Image (cartoon, rainbow, N blue to C red; front, side):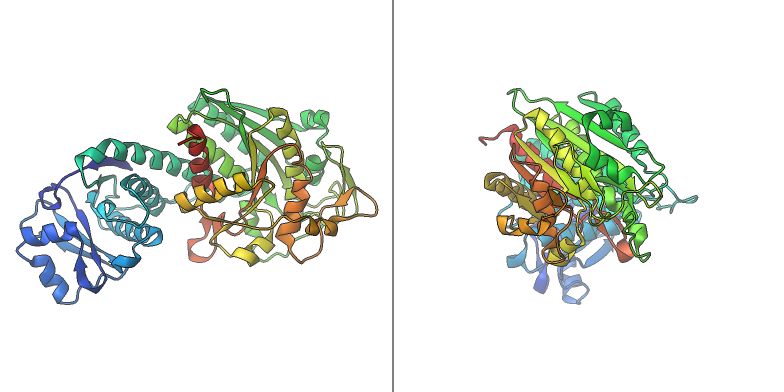
Length: 499
């Protein structure tokens, strides 16, 4: 979709549709008032009849409104004016774009970006309008023999800003939002692909394609032999049961003008997770194709910052493999030696994500990083704790944790900080190895983070458990592209750390 920025009065716009807001209790927004005046009170008359109450997300499409130059006027409910915040703004945008895309309005001018949102400036409103619009029209139909045909889909959206002085900043914000959306689309596409297509080898190929598309990204893909030479016994133990060869994917984007130490993103890349010998129940096992959404988020984030030409140094590390049961598979009770030299007793082969991340976190040391953030669909316990709203955040550094939380709030891709106290470490004790890969059921997401923390002693580190936020179930089943917005926003802040 194409996005442009404009400043002007709504009744003067020649367009297939002009979109304006109505607050709860039938209060017209300023842009709706301007159309109402031009139409000699037609909008007010419609509202008095009760056709539009202003409830959040409600829509009413009007044709041939007198006094205007647009073919249609779309009224969108904004809810209570005093409660018009991030969630309400994004909800109104989503409702508007979905209706536009379904009713043949191939282009439109959106005035919702002029509405004041508490604590948010016009650049935030423009960026989020682009991200939400792209989310609303996203479809994954690559695997269907006959994709759904949308009649005259929405192709161009003009976002209105209050003043001409906002145009330059608005254009930059729109470009930023589009880059983040493209990163989210890549992450969603990879997550939605089935495990028989999106294999570790396929992920490596897509990483190379990304480097071809964006020459500032440099990619290396290590095979099993190279991983063996590095001593990645923990990572390789997970791949033992699969016929699909493992891949360790390294992406480097070094564009900082300050010669800064890189930020390292580590993404869990289990392209399908059966649980291994500790086999999962069959119900909903198809969703385990999403177990590589951490890896997808790393690729999506690198794509976003490369498109924006962000002046930062970023490294992406993706340990990719399948977790399958076979005669070669790792067994409960086996002991593996990680790249760090620490030994791990594998009590449950379905706690495999932490095993592959362990060696990737050790590999990250060679970059002497500014910070390391791993992203993983790690624990079902995280879903129990936070549901599907917030990602779980664990960190050994409070400054890093606050920066990620702030980025998540700004991106509306929120995280919630969980404890990483030493008291939780005791559950990982083992009589036979340095420690085990699981503790008891209690605090499962915390003890999983504690396991990872044993490989992050040499740098500032944060862990994002996205098990509850990486994909949706039910009617909207599919990957979400999170936490690409959070990560991209955090990395953008590294470009001007004093700002």
